[in-house]
Amino acid sequence: MKHEKLKVEKRKVLGKNVKKLRRIGVLPANVYGKDIKSTAVQLPTKEFSTVYREAGETGLVDLTLEGTIIPVLIQNVYKNFRGNYLHADFFKVNLKEKVKANIPLEVIGEPKAVTEKIGILMNIISEVEVEALPTELPEKIEVNVEHLTNIDDQITVADLKVSAEVTVLTDPNQVVSKIGELVTKEAQEQAAQEAAAAQAASTAEGAAEGQAPVEGEVTEGEAQPQVEGEVKPTQEQPKQEG
Image (cartoon, rainbow, N blue to C red; front, side, top):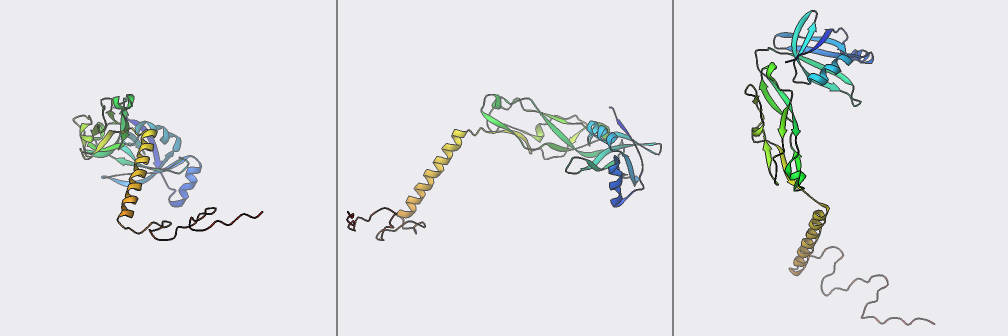
């Protein structure tokens, strides 16, 4: 497996002063691990960005610090709202010890239910947690959804295909992708009409059972409110002048 490479140097600028580093294109970072003292380091932001695009947080990186090559995983990458890198951590790994990592899921194919306009594809989660040796961590896990044909067809974590060297820690019953109902505009309008009819029936039933009238309604025996321009039938209409 190809390892990306980065070179860092120890960092003397700490705290709020690291803003000065970012302004000149230098990324503040830390190297840490079980058998290494946490060390403040720095490296060119552009070089980090290039490697991070390739390795992500699951690809091994050979990190050179003061002539020593350290196998690391990139973790805890922070960006500002503009998308500029602010900080990153390099976690030293033991190549003979398993590590846990979140692996992204990549949906491939188009479900038959979608192509035949039976339903819509709903992707519930975008990553799963796995455990493996650092050299066995997959870059991604593919989720083939082509066989999903009917409403409520689904793929769970238990259905994911991974190598024997990788253990998936996420709940095997967790739904990854499923087919939901295709809601058309006509269906939405019909649902609204049915809801209105049900509401009207409920109101009529409530009135028949002697429920208190809704504000603006009048109970039997009370004077009817007069609408502007309307004449009560018990009153004589005034004669028009002229």
